[in-house]
Each structure stands twice: as C-alpha cells, then as structure tokens.
Length: 273
Picture 1: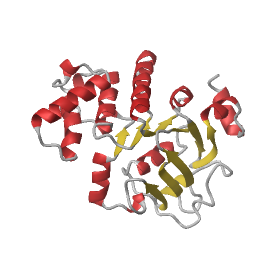
Picture 2: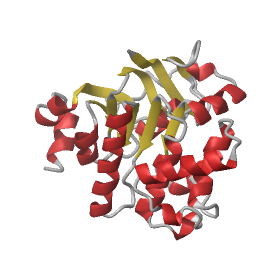
Picture 3: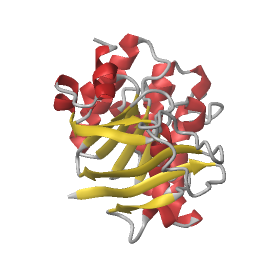
Picture 4: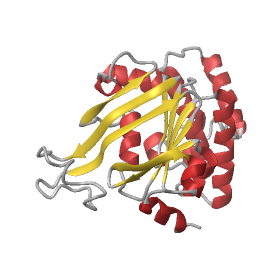
C-alpha cells in the first residue's frame, strides 16, 4: 500500500521569476537562478513510499535532500507540487496550520539533524517525549509515564535517566530520545534527517541498529536523508540520488550501490570505497 505519493514537489527560496527551474539543475551545474538569484532547493520531485519501506535520499551538501525532508515533515511550505498521504484527504502540502500540527503530533514523526531543532534541552528526556504525547491528547499522568518508560526501553535510553535534563545526555542518547519522541504515537511515516551527524562511529552503529530493529518490528514507512552512503546502505530498501535539487537516479539500494548508472552516482560511491 502506498503511504506517500509525491508529484512535482518543488521548493524555491526567494522570489521566483518563473524561469528558475529551467535555468537550474544538474545540466546547468547550479541550483541558483541566474535571472533572479532565487535558490531552487528541489524541483520536480516524484516518488512513492510504500507501507513498511525505507526510502533513502542521498546527495552531497546543497543537493536539496534536507529541504525535501522538511517539506514532507510539514516543517516548510512547498512552492509547488502535490503529496498524497494515506492519513490525509487531499494535498498534504495544502494542509492548514492546525491540520499540520495534528499530523505532526499523531501521524508523522521527525528526527532532526540538529538536536536543538528536535528537543528542548532544558526539559528532561522524559518530558520531551511526554510533550509529544500530551500534544496528541494523552492526559493521564501514570499512562504517560508508563508510555515514556516503554519508549525509553525500546530505544535503549536508560529509564533511570528519564527525569534528568536532556542537556546532560550524551549525543547518542539525545538522538535516541528524538527517535522515542518521533515514534511515541505510532506514526505511519517517520523521517530521519542525517540521523548520525555528530556521533562517534561506534555510537552511530548502535543508533542505526536500534532504529532498524524498531522499524522492522513496527513496519513503519521511513524516509532516511543522509550524505553517508553507509547509513543508506544499512537502512534503505530503495534510494533516490539527488544533485542540484533534482533526482538524478533511483532504484533498489543494492543496485544503486553496486551498479550505479549516473556518472555523479558513480563518483559519489567511488569516493567512499
């Protein structure tokens, strides 16, 4: 079953002149419009995401992958395009303010690249997760505490640290609290934006293994955005490769990694071999 179906998804920063998309992209080698100076973060993005699938989005810095993640997480408004989502009637990108917040609290989980974008560091770790539950209508104190304990156990955060300020947690623990918060209300879509940024290699492996286990157990549709091909290789079933705001190659992750067709994808993979 299709969870997300995106068509013509476009995000332009600035005042577009109407020629921005035609004057930017991989063929031009730039994503800034030479006519008006607007930046085309992404343009004409089409893809489908299926129930239980993990879709990887990979590309160098400035390729537009994080802008795409923000659109899908409803953290940013699109310039053009449509997104159908199984839990919303109509174009998801046209959802109003209240609808967006309801979807973010109940249906769509986001793990941000920068911890401060996803957590209140002066709150307790448990408080950060409880906030998401409260926003979704949870009201019973004991039920909330029990759910937070369950989520901390599931994401391998010590339950004994539940009431400690989040800024006393290690980077790996903070990332796991973000994941606990993202899955708190059993969303059908989870988006991870650079989930291993700033983490030591050994910590990265533990966080990724933990998330892969949870994703498989809950069978949740997931989008993973990363510049790290090892992350994509480990988690993603299919992969989109982006450059200058466009998808230049897509396919099964194993095929992309072992037999890349586009010259840029070949360079990207060879650079880390």
